[in-house]
Length: 56
Image 1 (cartoon, rainbow, N blue to C red):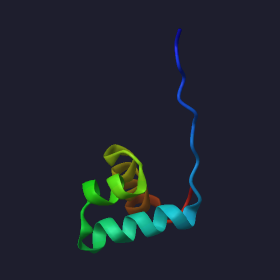
Image 2: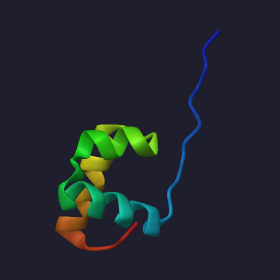
Image 3: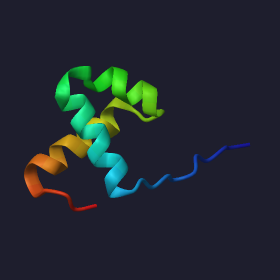
Image 4: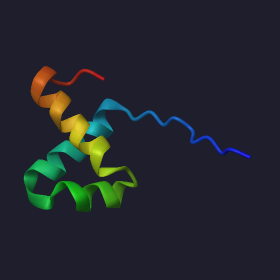
């Protein structure tokens, strides 16, 4: 039996708050853990923000 993980979507405001916290000195890993997201996902959001601005 295979369990599939549900795809979660996050509002832009949530992403921006996470990015600001990570970039503001808290660090990526602690912020990701507190928010219940993966470190890679937060890194992807930061990379996308720096490249394209606040697009989803």
